Length: 472
Ligand code: ADP
Ligand code: G6P
Image: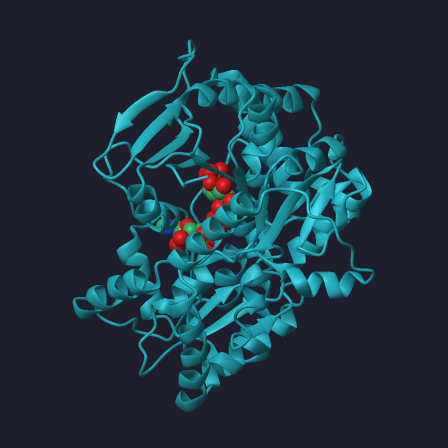
């Protein structure tokens, strides 16, 4: 089958006029979308009481955008409810934060079913379909039940938890079955891939086959690991251009940039910084921590709580160590333009990326891309960020241990230039090859291969490790 258009489907849509294309995903997929003609289907920014029953099409010069509208109450139960109060906490290992409401589960199914009904008539037989992220896991199942025969790929941007955590989702077998309806399921890390294999085995009696596919009920699902990245050169250019017209920070600066999400480990990070200041009085008045944490999903209680906690902690540290001349923590609770972020990264001696669990974490990659080759800063990176699999030259920390964070901060600040340069060179060399274009090309190539191969080639390896290696 020839490759037709690329059809991307995600909960968030790119701008209809191309005006705000700075998001990594749009930049990554623009080329692929414009090559054979492309369509991006995403949720409308505003939900309306009487939503349109069909997609609303907008033509851009490079590709078309089609928006779907949803009734606001159903959207809220789908987005804030099931997506962000069930799947997000469960997939990030926070089963204590799961809020089970039957209307959430039904809204999630309803929105995906309705979206499938709108998407199906817009498809051509040779379109390649690529669905993104946890808000749309049931979409392939819904499209297939409407008779859609196209190959459908899915990429999970967030982590997939281990089997027992996954089983905390009340309808976990259904969720597993929805994954099983795709032709290719892509993950950020080998950790996630191994979890998927285990979940498929337990929920659906899935069997790993010699070709790296999983056999489920007589059909095959291809799975693979495709670590997402950023537009490395583009981000570096932003940093270099901005740095020419901006002065360096007056004190060596530590920087953190994260949505204000409980998965990002912000209280633990501040606690690590507090331990650092307590244990190393010689650094007081000599460094600052700039934490930029814009609001996100703030109608969900867990997000309100984390905001209150962070404000309390930053106030406490400033009260404990601050002086008239020196504020130890600067906290900004809003988003900044990307070019400003790039320069802030460039002029920060230490990048603190310490999530408790994260699919990848693009900030880690942006920080590295923005550094001065001749005088780079040091990345402190959580062992639980997907990025840690690819970035071993960072200072890897356990975000739950404030002493570990404190010592990494000290090591980073004291690190001689030669070691900083050596670590940065290794990190940058990897990123330069593994940028976001590499990511999308690898996924789409694999989806095309699945198409060319057809389904169902059976052969079994007895040893799971052997099989995992075959996939990795
Ligand atoms: P997540 O997708 O969970 O938010 P990532 O680190 O993978 O985490 O990606 C976050 C993206 O959002 C990065 O590109 C980052 O630069 C951007 N971002 C985070 N905080 C801000 C902010 N305060 N202002 C602007 N952009 C931000
Ligand atoms: C993460 C998720 C994305 C999501 C983004 C912003 O990156 O993987 O799917 O779009 O966070 O969250 P929001 O809820 O604002 O879309």
